[in-house]
Image (cartoon, rainbow, N blue to C red; front, top):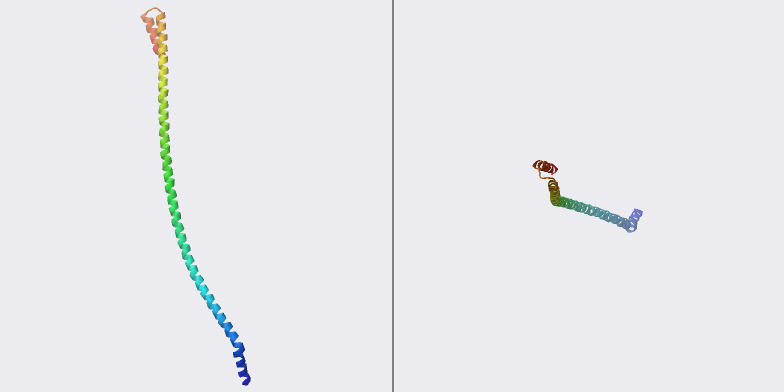
Length: 146
């Protein structure tokens, strides 16, 4: 019994304190690990919420940008249509003016030709003797030439 009591005293003085210290340290490490795991879990949940908020924000921003791009595209298309219509009216007006100028030029040319033919016809009439039948024939030819 004395040996047993000595063994108990020796164990309590020299062996037991390092074991309890190691056990207490192990308990503390496990508690710290669990606390860190809980904190990491909370951080992960918070990060997931932030990611979801960022994704929602990005989706909203992307939708707004797409809508803005569509509006800009429609504006550009409308501007291009207006410019094309203006350009078409300018081209049509220029073509009409050119056609009118060509018509005037053709009339002037025709007048010059008619005057030349009238002079030519009068010259032919005056060279020949005055005869109503011959003159009628010459005037008829002049009409066919015009």
